[in-house]
Length: 153
Image (tube, rainbow, N blue to C red; front, side, top):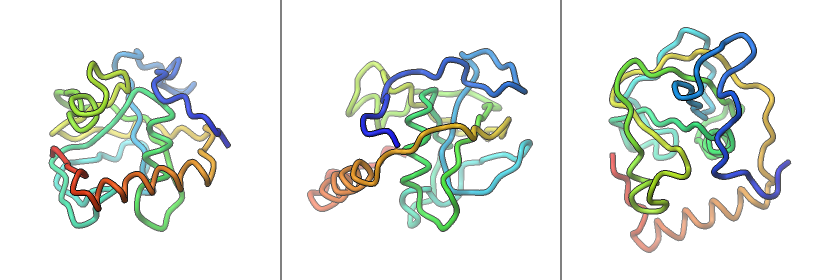
């Protein structure tokens, strides 16, 4: 398990051996949903992180570690999964991260109001330590308690 995640490093390929997407078109999506190649993730469904919220976007990143963290933090009973996804439409910076926390988008976090297609599943990744995940959850809870857990969706 990684104790110090590589938070802003874009994955070298962004794609598996079977798929040779250009890295500027390759994105990862972390979730606990069990999906198949060819499936689509679409806006208009419950958020991976706030089940009471219907998301207007599908969120993705070019940073494998970010997708791993998203998969580990997602609600649900399934195991964390990281998918390689291909947008079907326009992609924009995720303002929840880029505008408020990390100006300039060093996290390579994006979203799309249009579906993204599952291209492959990334199966070789290293998860975060239980201590790291606990600290991350505590930080999120503190944001909620102070009213600073704003979601721009």
